[in-house]
Structures are given as C-alpha cells and as structure tokens.
Image (tube, rainbow, N blue to C red; front, side):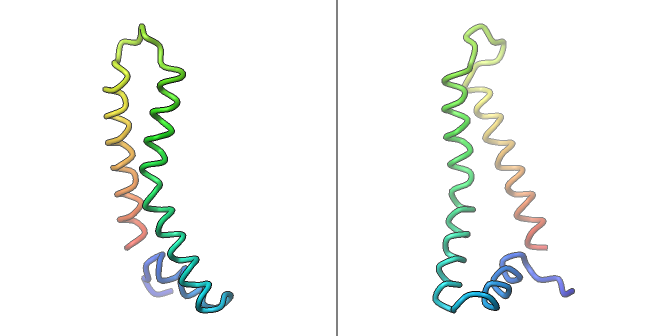
Length: 85
C-alpha cells in the first residue's frame, strides 16, 4: 500500500460508501472532533481535579494540570506525526 496520510485514506474510503455531499460533511466533522480533543481533555481534567483533588497533596492542583496539558500536547503531536507519515 502506498504511504498515504490517514486523512487521505479515510477520505478515499468514505467516497466509496457515501455520496459526495456526505463525505465533505463527515470529513469536516472528523476534523472538528480532532481539533476539539485537546480542549475536551483539558476541560475533563479540570473538572475531575476540582472534584477529586486532595488539598493535602504534595503537588499543587494547577501544577499537575500544567504537566497534564503538556503531556496531552506531546501525545497529540506524536499521534499527528505518526498519522501523517
């Protein structure tokens, strides 16, 4: 198989099973979902840390949030790099 990006392979597959107008809508939806992933993960982490964080922890809540945000960025960048070849 040729070394095509995930987006290209997914688009080619969708063109085979969906009408053209639906392909554009589906690809737009997937791109928007990928763009919202970071914000959703950070929002979830903020919510969970506000509910479950112990005041007596050795690490401050927002210091842990910064570390989490950087780790999420690294993972998303690595996944994006892997998917684009």
